[in-house]
Image 1 (cartoon, one colour):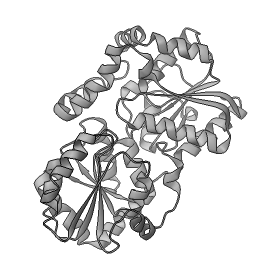
Image 2 (cartoon, rainbow, N blue to C red; image 1 turned 180 degrees about the vertical axis):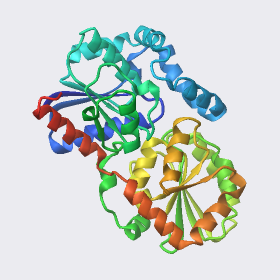
Image 3 (spheres, helix red, strand yellow; image 1 turned 30 degrees about the horizontal axis):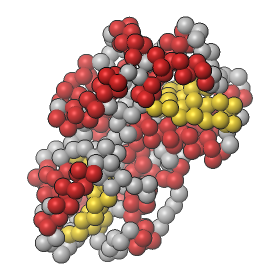
Image 4 (cartoon, rainbow, N blue to C red; image 1 turned 90 degrees about the vertical axis):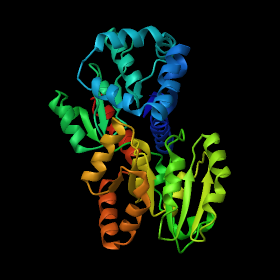
Length: 380
């Protein structure tokens, strides 16, 4: 058992935080630690730095995704601008450094590269001596995740493990765990029962529209495209924390009510994501690392739409390569592509088999168990 565990995320997007929350719950469920604390690193930085990481990121997703893609590729070179970036990060994270020193954790577990880099620097300067575990929350490895001082990496795929090894990371310091998601996604919940609970028809296709935890993307255009569906469908739109999006979609509701075979359900931020996924047949949206891992755990085939250039495009590539998704690059043909998929049940069944092969619903538990094993054998 660990005495004091420090989980470190960053709220630039919702996935890094959710991964840390999943690990926090796994620690509590197993009693693997006496004390577990989860910190959003950005809450202990300067205001300007915090805005750069969070608000600027969301604005870029909505208004300049191509710029995000360029930045992602530009910085995806090991050790590129490392010293300059570290100097900038250190300047803006002094409250975070103080907090870590005062807390004196027995281990730090990072689900974002920002705290991982700062912890690595603190270890190099002997400001802390505890081991560091790094949990990569996308399917691909980006150079920003690379640190000099760490004890273990947890990754989603064997390919990512191989990538790390090629860059010099010893194989015994890497575990293919999957991306940590809430253990509730590993629980079986009857599809019919979930549809009844949430007022969904039993005899229609249920299509889940995911906008991510922040509710971003061209959802209005997507919804207008879905109006062309030939198959009767229940459309569940998860708007996340974006109340403005939910309100604007509600105002347009009359557009969707003209078709008897087409019913729309608008859902705000919810703690019942696993139940909506259990009730659904396919998911349409952006393949963020956490959303994708949750969907795989619940057996959903992904229809990839407007992935953020960079990490989401790479996540999409992995799903397509493994036969677990289709991609729609042009929204006017979205309904056509979904209709084609639904018209070929054998193809859909084969894709679901691929989904089950990729799924790692108990990744959070796998990580906790591995850390306990490493500790018990003095490898941490």
